[in-house]
Image 1 (cartoon, rainbow, N blue to C red):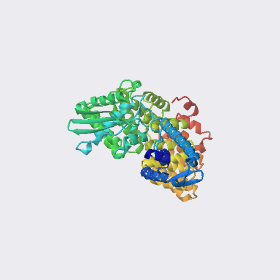
Image 2: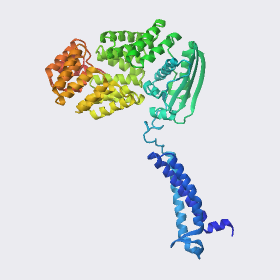
Image 3: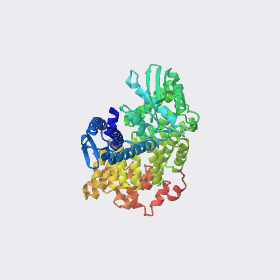
Image 4: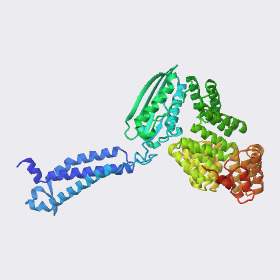
Length: 586
């Protein structure tokens, strides 16, 4: 008798087939379960090794033993093949069932999208990610001079702004895409975190007037390059390089609805270089950074007074210096107003300039109708610009449309998921909507991204206080290092904790040091104590002196004033009465 016939007679072949099919099925199930429970990858390799080692054991066992209706018996003790026929039929049925299950798993694996690993920041791999979406990573500085990082990152930001001008293309905001700078992560991981289908990365080597710019567009799903190119040029050709990269990206994405690629705003190369310095220091969001930004932007405008981006960035810098108190409030805002109007005069369809003009109208001029017009125009020009959406949401909140503000801010977060500012804004808006636990979560998310961020700590303190957790509020506001807000939170919190003397000391210091520019904050303390008359006295002082009153309509610390007959007339003086707000479209 041949060895093959003997193997069949002893059911060794059938046992091998059953073992192989069952092993394959076990591996498929294990692969799914191990992923779901985040089991280390070596575990699946160990299981494969165990199954391989088990195969010869099964063959030897099936050669020696037979499965009969009476149980396992040695093959030499079986007198007739009829004794094993029932179990042989059952084995055949079992093999067929396992084969059907295996085929089913193969089909399901092909038609059901693969789930993302547990803990992945964004679990949408490709099914829910817009194909027309891209993140521009900061280009790496390969120059000998480390200071040239300003140029490589500035070039990246200019490319980002060019692509963001395409209405049909979803472009991740700078804050989120630049957060991956110097992090050792692969492109698919970054793309999933930002929920984009494509990533543009590159490098810049600058030596004197010579440039080498390398850029490559990568598909997040496949990890393959869609396009790459290296440009060796003089600084005079930098705008042509930007145009070529933008055109190549549009062509590589093969999106017919995008139309023509945007073109770079050209200027003198020296002006562009100093502009990138100014942009670099503006993005540092610090007092020193703002001062240096003004210096470099003014140098830019001395070389080319018609370069609109420099005027717009200068306006944004002055607006922030007004908020930080680096310059007198009125002086800084007048400078911002002059700069942004120059930007719009030079480039009437500049979306970011319309947004900056809207901000000045809202915060400084308190002309909310005009602010809405500027924001609406900006959103028409660039509907998916995270900065514009986030800023317009602040106006919506100011008008009392808090739920719309939350909706717009969440849209902004889709485009800019790693923005501390946007998360912090969301916290403020949720608190105004009375959703205090959600506000706490949003502020914590901001602090996870940027530990120590003062605005996020202040928002978290406010949310804790509104949620009747004054001890936590005191602890958080001390981390903000923003004295006027710290005195407000502490005065209210100490009152709730029956620490009356400390509460009085805090409000006394607030009045002594900030009566001339923060009368509104003093009013919030007295309103929270239900000392209505005193609260209105301070509010009228703020209005009469032209001090900031932003957010008055939806400020939860002023809720005790809403039923007073003086409330609506006060809002009317600010352009925020029910009738005035109803006439504003945003």
